[in-house]
Image 1 (cartoon, rainbow, N blue to C red):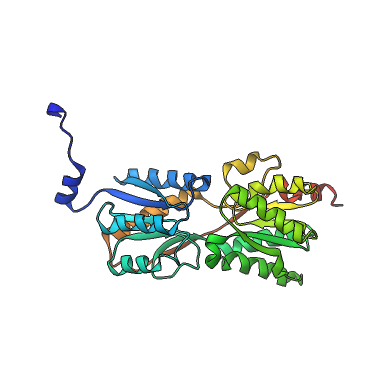
Image 2: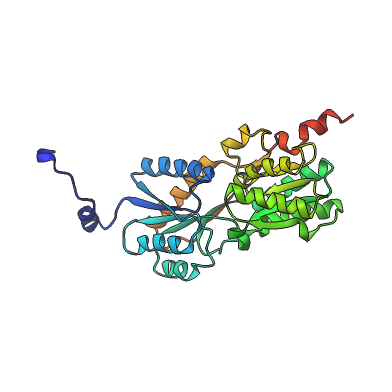
Amino acid sequence: MKLGWRPNAHARHLVRGRTDRIGVIIPDSRNTIFSDIGAAIEAEAQARGYDCLFLHSEGAPQREAKFLNLAVDGSVDGLIVMANVLKENHEIYDRLREDRIPMVFRAGPETPGIVDLVAVDLEKAGYLVTSHLLNLGHQHIGMILQEAAKDRQMGRLDGYRKAHEERGVSIHPEYKCYCGYRVEDGYHAMRSLLGHHPEITAVFFHNDHLALGAFRAARELGRRVPQDIAVVGYDNIELGRFCEVPLTTIGYSKELLGQLLVEMICRRMKFPDHPPQRIVLPPELIIRESCGYATARQHTP
């Protein structure tokens, strides 16, 4: 262009009434699952002519609220939200829906049904993990869940409960505990849970990120993984394959998840009156050494 002139994005927005930019709210910048999903979102968005503005709320309601307002003032054309604080910011979400601000959620099936969302079948995930551990002979299975998502845990817990009930195995409410979202929180929760309930022989974590802290905690307590304690995560992050004991986990298509989120926000921006859509992806149990499957199989007649 002559004289190095570049078009002004704000001026272009005023003329065209749009920014060609999608805001993506991410709750935890340290958890690589969001990098994986973010990469899929960005690739699909760019293929459709949109840039992405990634916003890291770090699980803080005030930060998330600040980012939500970007859609109100026209800084982005729509929002893809991976929220952990729906309850705290419900008034803002209600206002955005009333104002017909385009939003799509990556969330669990417990998220209110009046919004567009893509989710994973958490009940099936909880059932797959618990059934597998029960089949391996574990009778005392703990769960370490993320405190910030406490209001959206019924899917995992329903699957956990269903697997126990089908096999006639007693459920112990005290085997469930909550923690923060850092690796060190998983470490401290594992130490606490096993310290109070040494009879536990398997633990299902809210995600792989928290499960990474379990290995050190178990080792410090003199419990070997998987011989003395089985560990299972959720999300199938790449690091889980390279743990000291490769991590059994729940996987799903992150590429498809990202593509669907972008497809849905583009549809919502183009057709604001389109009925809310809910897509639930199937989970897959990915069996590795941390649940003791290989050891159990070696001793099976």
